[in-house]
Length: 140
Image (cartoon, rainbow, N blue to C red; front, side, top):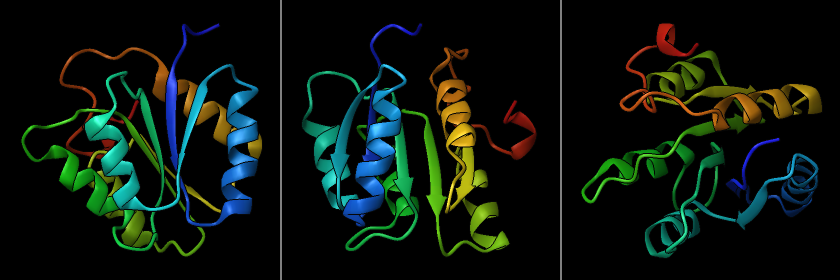
């Protein structure tokens, strides 16, 4: 069992977000929810307790998942692992997400076992500097 971990889940679809949150809760993680990319930025920047993983929908109002990751890298940088998922994904969007440092890119509808596996893998400790790999070969 992992020590307490916080996952920030962002999806503008309440039904999807609720289902994913229920699944993550069964893993024993604390789930914070956001319905937009801007809400993610607010939570991450002002929360005093750390967020250990971002699970971001690619397409949200106000700020896409990729834009969230880009903004979090700006000073003061927040380095947190990220998994993207999308129902409207193309190979190019997946390539961009992985190149930006995503631990994984999942296409909706995501199989629950695949989602659980990727979340657990992303929550495992990694060496410093390995949170945002420069290319997909580093996504071990």
